[in-house]
Image (cartoon, rainbow, N blue to C red; front, side, top):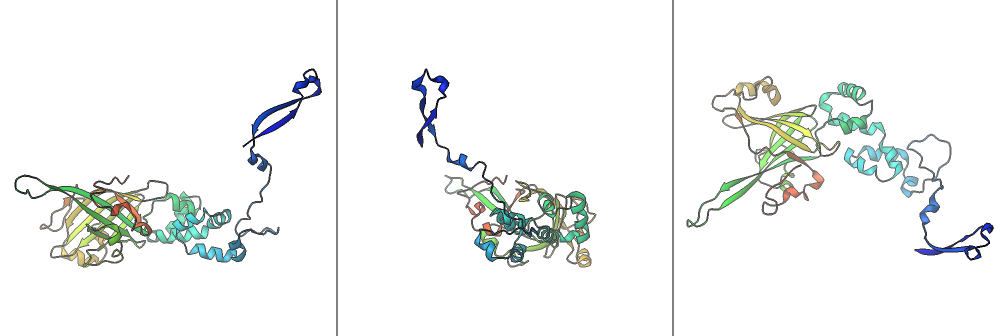
Length: 326
């Protein structure tokens, strides 16, 4: 938008009477009128200020601060992060340390309350929110999925063609804060497997094991039942594509080994107790040798339950023959 702007010329330039009024074209900038206007900030959550303040938002006028905090306390941390982007008041409210303390104590419940309190004060300046963002943690609001492919030679037809097949299969991991996890290897897509990854089931080939997180290293162990007990051990490295994401698991080691029946009876469901002190390629059953696998070690990618139906990992091989987890 353009307009004519007149600028009067001082009288000293009287000899140049034609310059008493200068005309030129200028661009209007209406946002310049906003400079210098002071906008009243929103009062912080739980403010004790005696100055009356009327919140223009209808939800804030109808919903007391106590109920708003109760709603936030029922959200998971990832939903809280989205809610903090709504407005300034919600951002202040979600910084309440009680919300993040409960989330941290739940996700690291295996470490114990005293250990978590000691860690947050010694490493994270007493900030539970900072601990949630910076400390490595296993996510339990979805599945870790490893998509693996390999080429298999097909049957030649009439000695004319030599077909090959791209075989695709998945490894699924679901972790629980209690130190247990579920494991499944299948050719089914994520949207189909997520329905059965809620309990161990031989019918669905879902097996239960134990894990422990030490810094960014995850040690897992699970037992395959059968005539000869086979123990699956994995060492994983936890990382994230962004700060606090924790959405990748790199497979450092995958070993299947044998275990005798007496060890299983003595330790019960404690799989990590069975392999405590073992060497990497150690076996306790001569009929089941220790095998260190070098294939099918594609990094695990985290897929939340909300994205299970729309994840790109559901695409067939003809649309995505190879997947780079990043």
